[in-house]
Length: 633
Figure 1 (tube, rainbow, N blue to C red):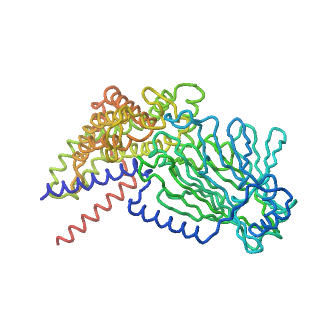
Figure 2: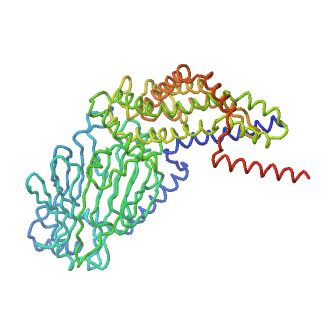
Figure 3: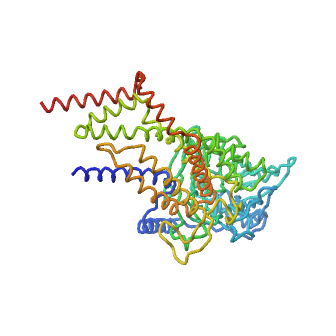
């Protein structure tokens, strides 16, 4: 009966440890709705869209008009009301105005007055399409619209109406004014301001003299939507980090879920970011939007078919009238999701880079990012070499903790015969055994928790690396050895089939990391088993460690096969260095004979006063023992 109890406890302990590892390595991965649910939701959305299309009659604006034609103006007023004037101007045609600097090319259409193409000059799409530059907006994947409610009960969409462009320069700045006119001096204006060498574009929306044309009793809705193009090699990896992020309520940050038709409705919104892993489009406002309706929809339901877009984003925000007019100072950002680049704007937009919460984010911000940035830019080396040096420096800094952990194991190993003797002596009295064991620890000057605390300190650094490397823009399309892109998987063989969870290819760095983990755990598990004797009523750690020796490498192979090669390289080098450090500590630094002599000397001395935790634990055990004796009576 006792043996069965131990087996059950072992299984419970194993499940807990396995669950923790799953959470650490897998928690970033968004949950997916079932195919049936996705299909049902999409059908519902399609039906709603169809119903709206039937209910609302589209306004067709003629593309060939004659300026000043009063007869035509009268006809247009029947459908366009006060904005018929805009359709009679020479600009009422499908022309494009281009503004650009060394970073971006922006094309703005007369129809709708919004950006119809935003291309980044210095970045290319994944290798298969290496001749193509990264385009965040292209081929009608995005639109910007204001629903205008007129005094004569019309609802007009600005995206269907023609704006008049005026391009000018103030110094080195390019200024493009797009005006939707209701008269010579009555208009709705979009103003774009592009500075040299900048990803940020000034964007102002204002109206003039429209209080007689528009119903100003309530705000008008600004609707921005976009389908995010795929730009990276691994569509699943890119889609995992593509998300809609926002800042609200004076500095709070959050994101919309990554599933199907997820929605958030924050208030006091300062910016909205349509993030595409390594690139992003952000709308910022100087005057907070009172509220926003933000929607995100996953478009990758089948990776073999859905290969053009990752997510569909939509933001609806109200623009309030002040004294009968609209006046909002805003900005667009079209550029890389690079922490240093975003932080330089001092607008908190670097918060869209997922670095982890709490201590994990602090480690990334104040240790990983500065250190890796220094190595990759100052020294001017291969990014793969930079990762190796980065790993070496981190592991050297952590080596004192590794030493303390191993020293604690060595002390526990020396005490094992004494603990085993106590176990035999008080075999029938587990509570007494625990009490005597605690007394032995105190007398020998050994803290049984000393080995656990150093190990726990290393966990935040491990988790921080899982956040840092997928967000490191510097790794994008940078090769090392056989890996052509450290930000994506390092495939060495394409499988003719797909293995669930694993994928359709074989990556080499995860294999090397798995081998290193296996030998590291093989090397340390023996000492841990020797150091920690089995306790009554506790899981059998020896059995659990034997299972984890084989399970951990398998987890590495499965979960890291589609992750970026940079993260797998870091884990491979990290475990190699740890093996080396442990070998040196075990064979050249820690002397078991000296530790044994010191413990024997400590036993002869006056026992140290136990710590508060040990005192509370001892008191609890004494109370339990007293209660047990009372129950027997």
